[in-house]
Length: 85
Image (cartoon, rainbow, N blue to C red; front, side, top):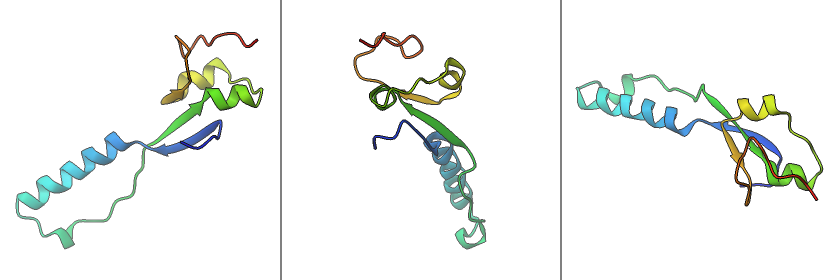
């Protein structure tokens, strides 16, 4: 993962579910060329708390609650981070 404090990414679980839908359609006899091309519509917010701390950025609890993933090294709780020294 890169060292940006925040980024957005596609929700892979949603992509795999849609892929399974396409497999089911093809196995039931639909010609693959007749299926529409789809692009991911569900995004996920990822917050890298380690990088945010290194840059001395404070991430609001509301933003943490909305994030799909948190990345933090050696912290017992992502919503209650260890105090900085």
